[in-house]
Amino acid sequence: MKRFLVSGMAAFALVLSAPAALAELETSPLTIESANGAHAFTVEIADEPEEITTGLMNRESMDPDAGMLFDFGQPREAAMWMKNTLIPLDMLFMDPQGKVIAIARETVPGSLRTITPGVPVKSVLELNGGRAEELGIEPGDKVIHPIFGNADE
Image (cartoon, rainbow, N blue to C red; front, side, top):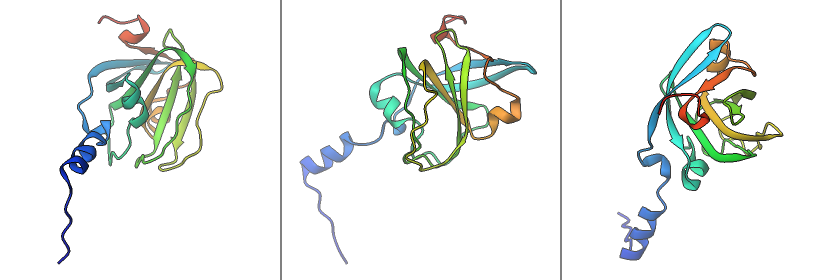
């Protein structure tokens, strides 16, 4: 039988390097207004650098009406990828008012390809892959959430 010993410092380093996905993120309601109605979600908020970097990595599933909202604060070029992401995702890119300006549909799990709308965005909303098409969500639709100043806190 092989035994592995981990020194106290090494164990401490392992704890410090645990992914943020294991940490409890703040959640809040979010609504997408599309041509065929309003669609309600409960989203995790990723607004700290480590949370943004980790995103939905290593998740095996996500509830149909769940998602992750990346809040960049000020608009910036978003360069997303699917490294260590196990489920396909739809990525909705929003301007500072919450308008969907682009959607990357059914992104490929594990892909290192950069996904970007090519223009600065305030935020990105990740939903289960195929969910945007299923609900009829399109560019031009409006996302209602406090980060856009268009919802009650």
